[in-house]
Image (cartoon, rainbow, N blue to C red; front, top):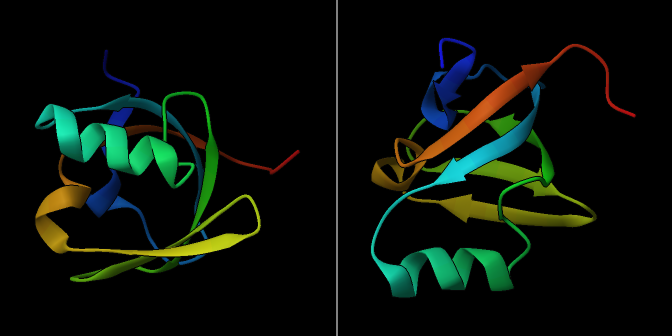
Length: 79
């Protein structure tokens, strides 16, 4: 799908919905436990390596290589 982007391509303050999370099963499961799963909404607080995200009311810091395994759909306005 052309509307999907890797998380690492988003700029600061960008909002997106998670479409797909790829990687080893234990990593995908751990991200889901932390709230980062398909269908969740996130905001990029600090792009780069590492990447700082806001997911619900939590902040998550992800290593740079993980950001390429998360595909998102950019949204213009948070709901």
